[in-house]
Amino acid sequence: MEKFLYKKKSGNYNLVMAYPAVESFAMASLGYLWLYKIASSIDGINAVRLYTDSNKIFLNSIDSMAFSMSFDFDFLGVFKILESLNIPFYSKERNDDFPLIFAGGPVLTTNPRPYEKFFDFMIIGDGEQNFVQVLDILRQKKNKIETLELLKNIEGVYVQGNKVKKATVNLKDVIYTPILSDKSYFKDTFIIELARGCMNRCAFCTASYTNLPFRYNEFNKIIDAINLGLNYTNKVALLGAQIASHPKFEDIMFYLRNKIENGLNLELGISSLRTDAITPDIIKTLVLGGQKHSTIAIEAASENLRKFINKNLKEEQILNAIRISRENGLKGVKIYSMIGIPNEQNEDIQEFIRLGEKIKNENKGFNIEFSFSTFVPKPQTPLQWAQREDTKSLESKQKFLQKELAKKGIQSKFSSPKWDYWQTILSRADDNIAAFLVGVYQNGGNIAAFKKAQKVLNVDFSKEINGFSFEEILPWDIIENYPDKQLLINEERRLLKKLL
Ligand code: SF4
Image (tube, rainbow, N blue to C red; front, side, top):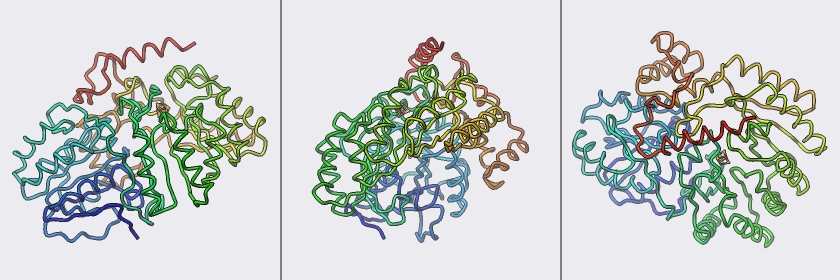
């Protein structure tokens, strides 16, 4: 069942808003749902949601179709939906008889180039404001060439062959889940964005660098929105790359805690907490709100590597955060980290075992789990030029960590270095990758399909894996105002000096 927190309008312009994954993920995606709310609040627009597991849609015609891309492998879902509607994948194969197909989302904001042959245009950056302008133009129902001519003048709209200025909005309106659904991955949960971006600027982090400058919502607007949500549900989740960076974060937590202490059966979730921002009061509120575990991101076990990636976290702060979590009622902690960071040495890997043992000894009976991903260099960050470590070497580091941590009684989980390898390629490719992406889809979309498509099409990805020099033109240089390139170069040089 769905509960609408706003009044949906309708009309005769048929806009399909597609999510390239199943309904449970779509209904948990705040960005997707908020843009759906914007479109479906406009008189004259019939906005229809579509997922990879939707039943057939019954529309006389589709006027245009928007996709939201949050993850690198979402292209598989895009192709699946286009194929189900008999719409050609390539933009150049779609004449005026086909709807205009466009897209937005974090993947495209980071690097739209791999997908530009499929979408007629893309929205780069924040979409809350320019989406309305885009819809105004689309509803004029001009032909494709004329429409794209008009669209390319809008800030944040990228039409192949042009440059684009990333759109950045002031957070005037607080974004929250406008439709609560029992089919959502976060069933009936009212998710609310507290802040966008992060002040910390870790050198690998797109959440920080693609969302500069760090912005946050006004306290009063957040409280009003939470109260609106609480009219419909008792489940609230606070969202943001670093919600604790909100200057009034403790006041927001205090407000929620008061509600619980006054008898509200509130289930409270948070996206992530900065390790150095954990306090007894925050943990107590989370425990009252039903949380059992917290997640802290340390990114690397050695202080030397943490300095290099600008994660300025002291070991003492990590130990302190875990102790506070244990003493104030949580059952355990998940410690998130990476391996394969540039300049990582064997000693840096050994440090995980030493740190793990220390944490275990200081927190007897507390559930400790390490979760490791492998470093994927991302565009628009100071590490965008870096080399990706060899898959076999990463696998052997994983084996070592799993075995040695298990000996200390510590559980560990790992991302797949093979998938992370392909993610690196997708992140840093340009439009030459298009045929390969179609080949991957046609071969089933699994790891074997990636390998097969590479072999059949004989494509060389050494550039995407080995990285770039500072002097090279990068595929995503078409985004004019991504963090200034010289600023990123200076930052990488500054961080290199921090290595011992
Ligand atoms: S603290 Fe987290 S969100 Fe902020 S820059 Fe670092 S990794 Fe990104």
